[in-house]
Length: 628
Image 1 (spheres, one colour):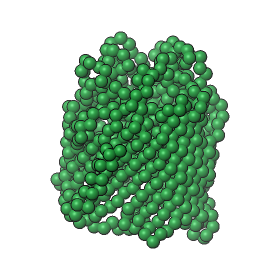
Image 2 (cartoon, helix red, strand yellow):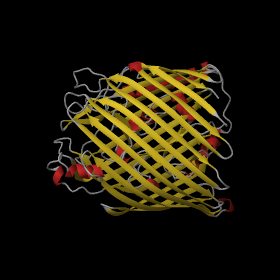
Image 3 (cartoon, helix red, strand yellow):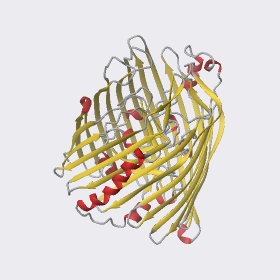
């Protein structure tokens, strides 16, 4: 515990001295009220003020993202409460993003509304390892299994928003180089007028990286290349109508060390996404119709084998929002949000003709308010899966806002249920030539989940904020790969559990801003022991401040403690670790920024997945040049 407390104490003691040394900054104008009125989209699938939300939402804006400086989305998300990323050997290697200890494939990630899940992967989960920060200006995270309107299996939602155009034309180029022969090059182009707007970002990242596994004595470096193109925009053809479009293409390659010698495997990943959305907005009614298609092709190979996979998700989404009542007249008010989802999944593996499955979902949620201090939601979703029948899920939330002499106090709580049908990959693996008993004789059924939370928040007039949340969630009839005998996918009767508390907050100190979080998560597997790769203790502490008018610095310290993994069917204890990152940014001119970033400056040697290395101390330098 000393490793957890000592850095926090040092940082907190240093904060007043830093604030005194830095030049004074202008006091925020009504910062407290502005924060309460911050509009968030992810909690209710429509923009609502933060003060009305009864679920737990984390936010990062463009300034937060720029100050923290990371090039990978996974590193950026690690700075938020209850988020743990387990990485298998460095940049571009298989990674799982867990929110409150839940499986990474139960986390839904949306980018400009597009579901980036990989339908060719075993559990149709997002590939967080291929997401880069250039072009991203906002992040919202809905913690816990509350994604009622996003699909009943969403155990947490991460929504990313690309940078929007603010001028008729803006052009920016950026470049970065650093340790392990790492390079990042890219450009963004944005524009807008009365008829429409667009934002385009192209990024190319490469690194030699390092030897991914401790059991590989060959010493080869396992490199990574990623080329990402992303276009988002819209047109406004007539009054009250908007048509939006999103196109995304990711082409990535990573060398990795597989499960068996000679540890010289290569993975290739190509994902193409398209989305069209038409929205009509009237005075008391707005509705939208969207179509999305994603095609993912990936392969895994070495000198003796090659496996190819292709997955496709096609989806139609209709959503309506009907506004009723008027809180100002002292009567109940609210929005009725309803919609229909029609999803088709396809999977093709090497040498087969492919499999297909449809799932239909309908949902409705009443998002109500009484005057300006009580906000509640009641909703239900009904899904019909081709292979696993019909299921109904629920969600309810409550937020109660109380004015105080120093700001506002919010009491909140929520509860939700869900289910996850076994993926096409899981079902077909157990039927294929690689499976054997007991997996080959197991008839997989759907998983069922439920979760709840209770929380309290306080906003001070000064802009300070603190939040305390208790959460509990469980999954019944969990499907896991058989790590003991490698027979395939097994399903164990019983429940897994994650339960704990989150404490987070932020504190402005003149020109210095302090943010931090601590998460205690007590997990239990079906067998009764702790769940694997779920640290019991997670903590973050960060500072950002203006050293001069043109020189800014940011520091983030994080730690993970008391986590287990499994090796050859035997539980092993992973080492506790702490990581210190820092970024220094210099605005040379109005058009040119230079920055220097150090990651893992303590050079801590640790593993997030057993026998898989993580990077030691690394240094990166880069520039951002705004041409227009």
